[in-house]
Image (cartoon, rainbow, N blue to C red; front, side, top):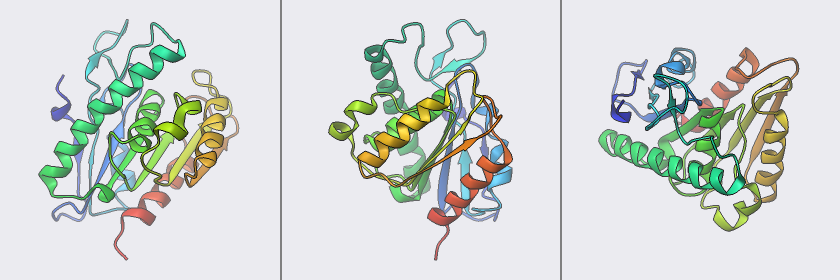
Amino acid sequence: MDMQDAPRFGPAAGEAPDALVVLVHGFGADGNDLIDLAALWAEAVPGALFVAPHAPEACDGIPFGRQWFPLWDRSQAQLAVGVGSAAAALGRFVAAEASRLGLAPDRVALMGFSQGAMTVLEAGLCGAVPAPACVLAYSGGLIGAESLPARIAARPPVLLVHGEADEVVPAAASRAAESALAASGVPVRAIFRPDLGHGLDEVGLAAGAEVLRGVLNAA
């Protein structure tokens, strides 16, 4: 499954794209899992092209699923290697898309869910995707938070959204990310949703639309 074959949507305005929103799926899914968000968020950024790349690796133990990095070894050292490789792959994809569209780095927004959230935080903060307009991270966390001050390359606005009842990635992961980002001077807003499990809800999606509108719409 080629990343370049990613599902796309928009721009809703029907003109040449003036922004790019990259939707990064979680472990065991593929780009089709998130592309439906585009129709919702296109109301906020009608000039944006939405693209949801498929992760480059076949998923461990899940036929037809994709992964940004393996989870068989969840030691911090191995996770750091994995997310670094994932961020680099995402960065190459985003660079090719932005170049094709003639868009500057600050016209690119990153959104990720679960493992995708971990990937976009790494990519958007540590240089794989240089100086994006924003990073939206849902139900994820920041791998290697303790080393962020030494690795950080950009400080885009970050939105963290997490369900308090998440049974897959504990909400504590986003709380730790919030603390690490704030300590590194990153403008961060965190929303923790009572009773929400490992998923998305209207409140979190509305907050994402608000951020996209603020950073991507021309004044």
